[in-house]
Length: 261
Image 1: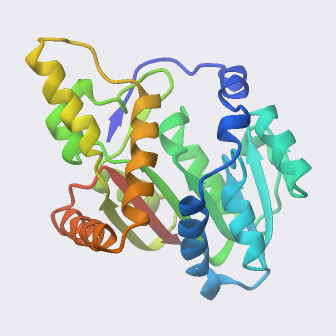
Image 2: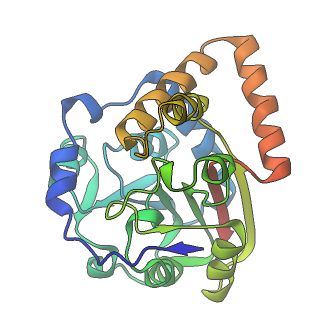
């Protein structure tokens, strides 16, 4: 596990400015993918309560709602919270530690691309464990410190971006953290790589540029590639095979976490 020594930023205002009309909606392929992910939460449905931490634009909340979940959100961005509340969802503005949810309250807690942003992941995971009912599920994604891009690009990888990203995890690091907080049946796999960023790196290296790559470009090109591959059957098959290989060799750029309480 890699931990930055950069002190905790007060970045709620930064995330307020991050959300705009252009990124408070998601393309169709994102909604379809989230429907597939949420469908896998069905075996954990008992209280029917789901919490999405770092809910952002609310795309996962909408997928959960379509699947019949009583979905709630939490985010530090007032812009995001105002948006999801306007869409009819109950949502808390602030940190999870301040929300004071009851113990064993939720069937499922989700946190997509969140862990890398928080200064104290251990405390966050402990609180997630507390609010999940026994047998409940925590589903999360976070960048993989020792994935293909991390190994090839090193400090030039756009994910290495303090103070926005404070922690990057290896598979062993996140698994140890989860087990220490009482989770079991931990399933971790790695998927995905952004070839556009690797190609950009190759061009920059030829120019002897020492800078890294903007996170916005990584997100934009990642969306574009995923949309292209999702809209074409042969490309979907190629993506499926590529992700299978990345899972097998544990070199995907994204860690996918399924952990039961």
